[in-house]
Image (cartoon, rainbow, N blue to C red; front, side):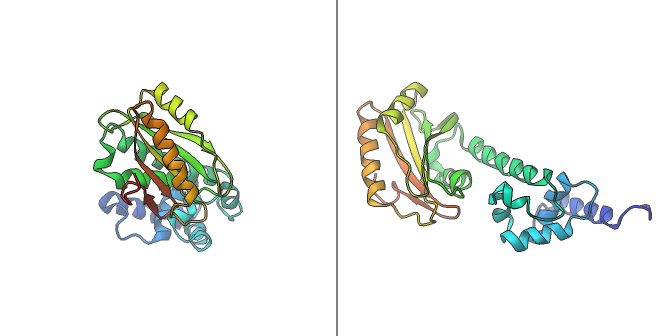
Length: 229
């Protein structure tokens, strides 16, 4: 490599070669962040901002979950990099959703839970979503939809709207999911009452609710596994 090139060119090349050979295995957290930053910052040393991001947000998950406004306060990453990190995160959510599509969701419930933890688990307001399934309990293509968005501790969900949307989609079964922004995924009494009301409304039109998941960024509660469905 030419001596006229900045030192970080060689470092970037070594990081990329390590990734091609072994993936992310053996890489320090800041090195993983460095790799991501090189995609958006082509002509600067990114080791220092990578370490600053780790110090500020803790790990890769914390960085990708951070609001774009907070990312923009970090020195030396500019205004494009926060957007690039959000694109990477959004692409990961799409990947997880497409990994579940056309598969029987109850054969690998952890994958669906991981999808929802990443999609809504980090949000500061409560969001209620529905996955629409066919008669074999396979996720329909583009089969996840936000039904209601609420406040920090509540999202109002109307059984009639859920039923109408399920019928319009041609769904035979549903998986429900919502987040608890406080991180405690145990269902409240209101959650239990709402679930029963939604189950009854769905059964009235011969649609089955196969699970209701409550998620945070790092945890999940399944009504089905808990015997509440």
